[in-house]
Length: 88
Image (tube, rainbow, N blue to C red):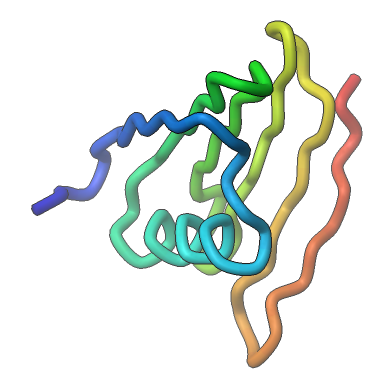
């Protein structure tokens, strides 16, 4: 249903859950070579995911139009590893 290079837009009331939704979105972005964004209407927070290299997803969290957190997720190996990136 998606093609490499597509950009997916999603929205909901709450932030995407960390034990289920966020990891699933990261895997989907990696596996299908797409980018994605999610906007939480109740919290005003936005999340953006993009593939930086095979097995590496950049997750950016924004609030009020400014970046509040940015992570590089390494999905290679049995357990994903997260590295916080500088937001300045």
